[in-house]
Image 1 (cartoon, rainbow, N blue to C red):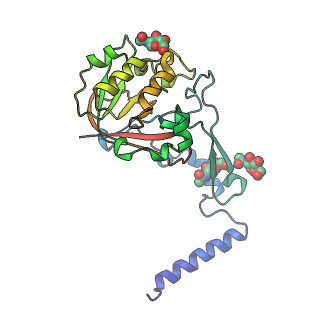
Image 2: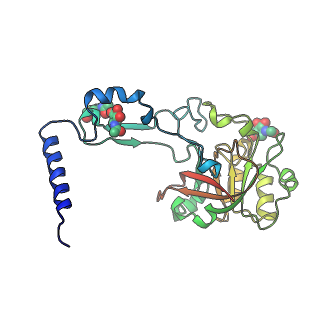
Image 3: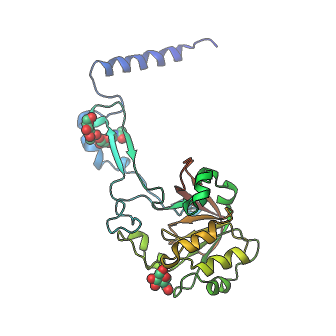
Length: 273
Ligand SMILES: *[C@@H]1O[C@H](CO)[C@@H](O)[C@H](O)[C@H]1NC(C)=O
Ligand SMILES: *[C@@H]1O[C@H](CO)[C@@H](O)[C@H](O)[C@H]1NC(C)=O
Ligand SMILES: CC(=O)N[C@H]1CO[C@H](CO)[C@@H](O)[C@@H]1O
């Protein structure tokens, strides 16, 4: 294709910009020094941070990462997890952040290798999780607030056969545990008999919960073992389930393709039908 006059102009302009930058003038993406100081108060430059999109049709059920987000068995939260080793303020052409996080931080997913050494060694990492399980119709249910998730509680929920994905909203949401910096061992989760009841009596393949572990602290490993033994159930933890009505939604969860990792941060959204 012949080069049009417009394209020549564009090329000339970008060459000029590069030349100007090379000669020590301002980075083309920086405002003039005077303007960049005042931009903070500019209403146009206030980013919108949302929990819902499209008038409430899309609900974000992942927690935003915060330094004071609870971290497993710690009182101090996750702490600093972002750094800016290359910054425009420091003369770099662009800003480039680095992050460091335990893979089971905030809203995250567990792979079978989390609690089974032979699965870990065999490579059952988060990159092997089935996106068809992580995406599809899901039921959000409220569970009784006075008990952990025992077999008795599971039976009382009467979750019909055929339901493959369930997000369990518990006392953890009422207690706003994910908003407290100190890790709290008294969170609600599955007892071993509750996990076993789910495996034996339902078709649930995705279990979601509203604190850092689907398993109650007292049955931490036993419940995980029951869920992950057959490698067909996916555990999504620390979901943000406040302000969502119980019911059926289209769930969409995407872990990072972290080959070799038994956990991953995950973005989950609900879309209303
Ligand atoms: C600026 O660069 C120095 C040296 O490369 C680095 O140590 C420092 O952290 C940088 N500062 C910022 C704000 O990026
Ligand atoms: C759930 O179990 C934890 C221990 O794992 C306990 O501290 C907590 O009180 C229990 N919660 C309820 C509502 O029974
Ligand atoms: C364009 C942009 O994001 N600029 C940021 C680069 O990083 C500095 C900090 O070093 C910020 O102040 C800028 O806003």
